[in-house]
Image (cartoon, rainbow, N blue to C red; front, side):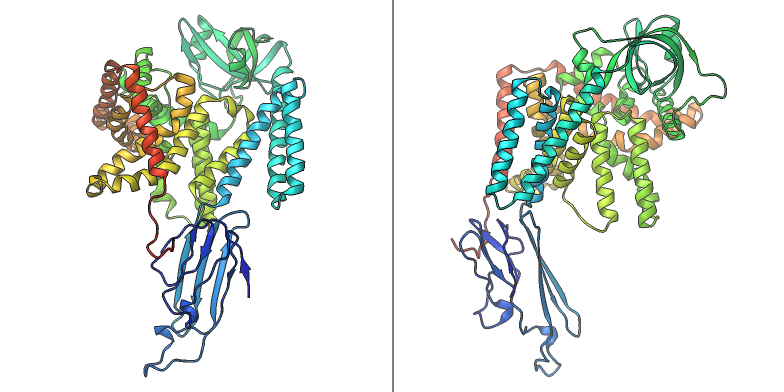
Length: 586
């Protein structure tokens, strides 16, 4: 007899003959029989740490009977439970081997502790990154490391899950080491004169009468401000291209120094002369970058078919290029709570994969995985590897790898694993507002979509499924980004709720169809391109109009507070458990 100890399981399929339920931490196997039939034999739980015996024996079933109604010889009855070693996920698989090879499977999945472990690991890494910035130079950092050491040793000695706590301590130490290393690299960059090649890290950005560029020189990033002929020459290039430069590397001396440092910019490069790379030299870092830039250029050509600011907004919606948007457009999108539409997110990644899905589905498993990862990498480069893009692409890549391995994983686990991995790769993401907004929006969709849907199903909306599909994702995402938004930008406008409900569906259509149509328009004759892009002009104009109305109808602050409180309260109410299986004993 085998004993397995589940912890805090939730009940699913309570109407099935073999089922696992929980009540106050106690697990029970409830059956509808009198205990004489092994199939209906109950599994009794004891206290909060239940032991579930695996019972093997003879089983009666319709498929195990002969045509004359007599029971055949007993067959092997295999009952296997897969219990996550650090979690609460329980899968019961009941397999009856008989002449018909009948198989029944029942799942009882609770809130797996893998979610909590990965989340705690990401949190421990974040704490280590924060302490790693200070090293051991401040009393706060010394006290923090001492607390980690004392708490870790004490809990490891007393706890029964020592290896989990050891891993958490390792995550904190690794995060601290990576953070300390990155900060040292920023503060110890070589300064002085330089003559050689500079690789553009970002697209040149017009600011007032000048142009701002970020270039990589000898493996370090420097910011430069160009004017006159130098600015015109720089505007002819894009990220990934190289320039021959002569100038002086200097430390950054401005109030924005820390903001630049967390973007890996170590100083300022004063350009004396600038010229293109000699003919025949490698102007691009890689052919992969070349391909991404050519597609981006074709998309830009298609977007320019639209008149006025519509082309700039189309570029922002489809591939996150907001460099050409006027200040007035940026202001109204921020005021109406629609600024996230011009930042590439998981929605854009999903739409790109949807566009190439007909090709991917024709490939075998391994080639499909390789092509999917290449497409994701290409899209990240094309959208300039912004933090929100990195989060979305990494989650999509992990999902593709898990699927190719023939396994499944929940979105919450993938999000936690993404945070953990990217914190180690780039600790400076901890100080990126765009990163936290992206994580918050994704987390809101993952954690709140289903609870909100279940709550709304108890209302009259249950008769209108399309209404829930329209409302639930927007509400869940807004709740997810609310904490970061309040801390950084203040209380969001109450108009952001109706504005998102009105603008997001239309913007989604533009994002989904914009890439293939804009590419076709970029290579098509002008008359054909105008016909292709005309519907997108209507969609972009609608989104911009909604943003303008949202900016104009700004409610008082108390209404914003009430709206946000109602939204948070609705989410908390939706997450409260209110239903219980009928056959559970109180």
